[in-house]
Length: 162
Length: 204
Image (cartoon, rainbow over all chains, first blue to last red; front, side, top):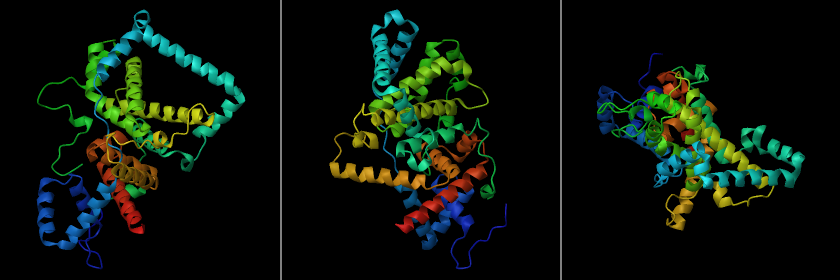
């Protein structure tokens, strides 16, 4: 790790302390460092102000809160599973499946394969990220994030140097 | 991640207080057709997967259906799980891939006019509380849009770390495992992401 300056040329806390503030914010500081930083925050209003600005940026990030787990979710799921394993006992599920198949056939018949091909191309298979909807973009990011382990991670890059 | 608040990441939910079966053991049983083990796996992960699906699809109804489809797929594909990955990262990948496909199908159906161009639904920003005050709901929707825009402005590797830290509540250690990078790299990317967000905030 590069030698750390404690203060920048203008007297403001440097990058190392900014990182400590971030770790503090995220509950990632070891106990000893936490106590030390807590003591500094008590007496250094500029440092406290920096923490407040960092917290404001962090807290400003917000996505919709999730609804509570719907009642009967697991029971319904197990029933669907049972229906798939024993098709004769779950006519409701089979009807659902046939309805889906019928819709797909209607889709193909109604618009033609050429239009469908155009739609598929235009639907994002080759679009740049700027053309994705917000939801697709976020889903893409989640996909990328959780693909990381299997893909061997994104690898070490220069910007990862602490 | 809030100081003093216990992490809610899945890797920490297998508490030491009781000898719960590991995800890998449950999944092994699921691969053998054990529905009790499947039920246990669902109970353990339904909250997180429902939340991710709702976050990506934009409404609880679609999320419920999607999450069920994801779990059914997990049941079918349990034997394909490779132990070098964590079970919960595997679940998340299936979920996000499923949601991506649904979003793209939705786009096709809108393109050919089979579904309406419902901006409210498409925007995916329905508040969890249907009785929410309209002004508050609008303010919330703007915050969500601003968040998505802010995230989109980050480089991909910073986005991944930010999402996992902020919205999935994973610790640096857990993120390092999910992304197969060091904790130092997690910290560096998150730090640069925070700096960029601060800079963006100043520009507005």
